[in-house]
Image 1 (tube, rainbow, N blue to C red):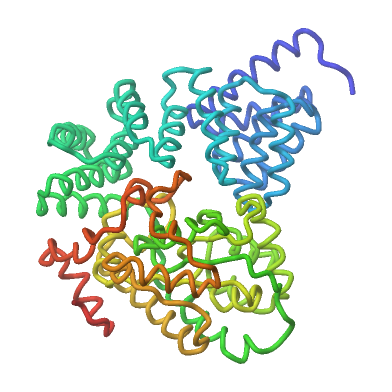
Image 2 (image 1 turned 135 degrees about the horizontal axis):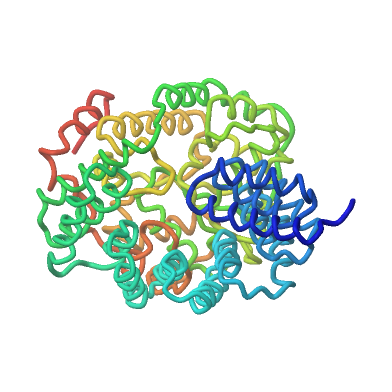
Length: 530
């Protein structure tokens, strides 16, 4: 292949510059045209393939992104940014070994580009290596000071480690640089307890100035609600939560009919007979699954368990579901569907259990036991029982109104799309309860139900019961879970630094009138409300 002459080289540089700028402005069509012109001159230009990869990411075309970044590193093995992008992509697919290999290649190059350093931090975060991630986030902010995305990642990491004072300072710095940054205002409100209404007034003015911008308003309204609740202004807080939920609901697609079909399919497919037939699973006894609905005390229970010297927290692992998808060759972008679970019923259980253990090895470390705290794993209890018959499963039970309201008032990232409308939230909860009743009846004594309220009110006997169920010797450290220094990445990151408390029990009753639609939907489903 002939090499470009001087004028073509100049043209290539101009096309790359134009293409990257178009991508940054969201003009994907123009960026794509630049790529075509680049490859017409030099098909093997690494930066051209890298631009295609970034365009694939922005267009949510992961297949194209994977292919383009792989082409980039094949053409230029020292392209740190492409290796870093591959590492992150492999992690999102649950291919941890490949992600680790790509990350090692990135580190081999000793990158100094702040964007690459931030990507390394992001991948390490996905791997559960939060301490190592913090160093790379800090280096990224030093290399490119006053760049809010890098600052946000560092601040979030500090929150995970309980360093809310430094995190708050960074959030305030971001707001100083970008006064109308909804996410920074929300993060600041989430990480501290409001002592006055100055920030509330500022955010309310931002909402008024923004007008009809549902994504921004969701961040602002949830932040306003949280701070008004801190200030015990209950009616005003609920008004903000409801406005935030309405704004968020306008930005997501929740297919309730598809969810009903999935729950019906699970109940129809995973019977006692299904569990008893076929090959045996993987005998490894190290996994402990803590599951249920979000905001029901799963983090509290996880912290009690992982205070034990023999147990490590692996975080909220997506890996069991990802193992199902890989083995079933299931490519629908929707995370959980009836189609997936129908296909999963025929998988080899030992292979499923083995792939889960292999793919989660880096996150679970070398402790004898580990906790996977992904709440949605309750959907897959029969598959877990068959693939990992010696694993332990702990299911959190909480008052249905408190559970539903706790989700309704929480802004989630990209999960729990049912939680932004009161009746949708209640109907989802009814389906969840019905499925758990089915699992309990079909698979008795195969998992432990533990009450959030009982544990919060009387910690020691419930903690002892929990540790005994896990076949672990008792350790007094399990009562001092709040003294752990490890990172917590869930919505409970701030609260778990405190001892067990009962402040959240019956919280929904402050809003009893406003929550009438939720209560009525639960009662219509036959769920008692107390």
